Image (tube, rainbow, N blue to C red; front, side, top):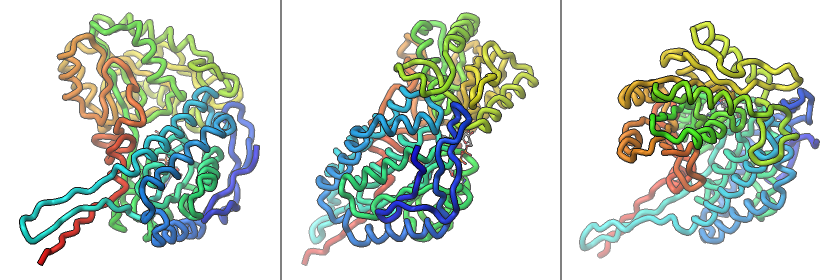
Length: 479
Ligand code: NAD
């Protein structure tokens, strides 16, 4: 596999912070090297983006034409989908079918937002005779995007597409563990005919390149997806420069499964909700709260789903829906396994899985835990691995109290045939998104983001575009 370079001001090159090995977590072997940027490289990328912004090359363009460029980037991804997916699968550990889905999802963001470029409109504000007043939505300028390793292509795509659609230039900091596939955005920007400097893609260490980008005085807006402590550091840097940021942080999301739920169908939600991408999903269904009358049955079904998954190198799992791949690194795998061990020490039981697998690579068995109580670490903190905690509840009130009883609030779910009960839960859940009878229902069109410690601002959907623009009011005195 080719070494990864940085794409700054329309040119590919090495970084001043040397190179790092990118490991295939499915085998433990080195795949390729990635060039690492330092603060000076970040400076060059921000300067290029700022130059593009100040030139008006993006912001003065007729929006419908800008939208065409954004859509063209999506078509580049589709035209090169298999190659991008193979790289993503190998560097991230996910199955090949998941990687293909991620690339298709990434392309969809460019299609969805590119189509909306001409639809973002201000309004006319009536001020009575003597004035004509209107608002305009203007880009911030330089949008900095710091991307995590769990869905590096899809998460970068959702920010780049929205930023360009609204006329911003971008600097994207890709994740150290899985940076290679993100080269597609540099190639896509060039293929689409965007001016050099409109999209800059670089990798670097979080504390070095990431921190330099977040604190850069000429960055005008920041989008971050990742862990809470890093989100706090980035928001602090943003506050010092008085620039807005969007934070998509973790979650500890709960599904409430009532006694009347369709448990046959819910097996599919377990499969999707906690074992997709080996559980490395911020909106993973990491807790299932089930009515006590069906607890034993649900645990039995969850164990069946977990044990039924074939786990191994993602590259060997290309049929849609098949198996589970590796975690992104042995470090992440060990972190998840240690959380399972601590939960057992605290009194929880492993009903399925729970152990590292005795094969090369970063594999953890699909895990189901019972005997978990709401205050345990495993029920409060993000595992970011294939670990499901199942807890019983006696009534609706208790279920909602447990669901809302963490500092997070990313998503939630309710499974019932009773529309009133589903509606009550949807209102009561402190979460940015509630799924009724299907975990992960939604798409690029639906706004996504957290309550509480899960962050603020929204990505996806129409709402996200508003994070990339600022409102200008123009009042004209008519004499
Ligand atoms: P992280 O939040 O530290 O890293 C995410 C991105 O931020 C990476 O690109 C990283 O280089 C960058 N970064 C790190 N420190 C930075 C800093 N000081 N300033 C600017 N940028 C910085 O996440 P991680 O260490 O890779 O993973 C740790 C845990 O975070 C995981 O176990 C998981 O619980 C959580 N996580 C959540 C998500 C999510 O989507 N919510 C994604 C990845 C990780």
